[in-house]
Image 1 (cartoon, each protein chain N blue to C red):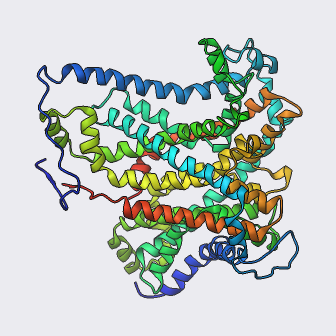
Image 2 (image 1 turned 90 degrees about the vertical axis):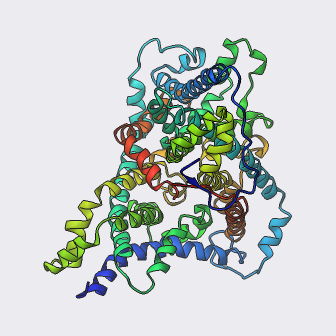
Image 3 (image 1 turned 180 degrees about the vertical axis):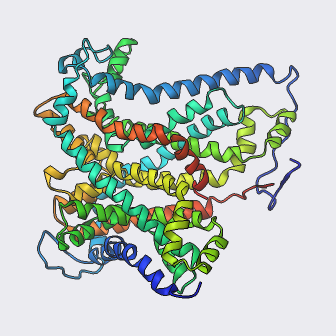
Length: 295
Length: 301
């Protein structure tokens, strides 16, 4: 590859690289700097204030309240999604259930459904008068359970998490199913000969064999749980009853685009980003378990 | 476990061998099987039911929505869809989404393929740095960039414009696109490139006439993911598209839903939701095998 190699490379890379630097790299870099200023409103005065924004963050009740909602989601959502996805995947993959193709097609659809649409749909699903949930409870005689699901500080956040789980299970189901297909069948045959039941096979053989997928999935789910902006903004735009469901990304958005406190909002963003990175590194490094290699 | 080799001894004790149950595997296993079949079917119902309910609700009158959430619509009111399309502005939002998402997808596939091809098939100083700079873009959360991005786009005079939103969509879809296409281009034979260059084909000619057609399966897979992902995008238009007439669908629906308190036209809202789901459903049904294969192939390796 001789003549004109460099002009060619430059001509191919120039536009994508320019777009990437202007719209992605520079905003990320600026965010770190802005978080060290007191930039407010649309004024152009940015005074360097060092770590003052981060100091304020430490004693900001609203921030920690929002963070606590993210942390609840961080624990509950991946746990349910991964457990359900593993159970469903092992139920169809190992025993070759009839119609597993149909299940794959159906289960995956919520993942491609735009989150805003799912959010609006489920906000109405939980509607106290017209919602399907209360209607169902009345029909089966559980009238006493009916309530304004999204208007009740005790159940609003769990109700949103159910939607998150609903939307995510199918994706990880397909992912785990694919990973399980590459586990050699004779391993399972040997296990069956040894008298291992299904649950035993799942815990002792399948999960260790696809551990890497499980690990990466928990990182992805963790990142999603630390964000959650789109779903919450479309289900409970004002942070829910008494701000009982406001998450950090919503608080950031409000701080920046309603209160105009850009410096402080950027500090929130950096803090959330650092927490996300720490989580990802922690899961990938310390939750490591020797991957069993086959073939 | 004859074919398996263990990389290093597992930290946990090896699985204890369980003696086969005396009465064979049949009974317990069969209960288990019925149990798991039931669970699988139940989840399928839980997935379909809310969607089916939305579809039925879209045909009801407002009164019916509140009085019989369960039942079928007494008559199939197609005018809900017409009302959503015109009065609810869903038509405008739909066309806006189509313009922005289709342009951005086409553009990111072209630029992403060019970048990925150069990274995959040429050696030049800074190549690895470039590759990792793109890959790192997938790891950073978008909301961190939100505030500066707003000002970057505003200073370029692109706030509230289609080109502004399209270019930002392209920039944020590049990391994923480049990452997957690099590994795809690496699977294509180098000998073809060399032969074509010897025949006097230019570097760009090799890319457009030989490599791009060969890479079609990969490009289609990634393109579908980009289309679905960008159709789903909410936070970028929320910040960068304040002009009501240029709202994209997700934005418009959120506003419509939030305004239901004042002038409730629930049936039109549901019709709007159904209209918004349709393109996603069409793409999904047409390409679902490809989507799931793509996931299994590239899926977090």
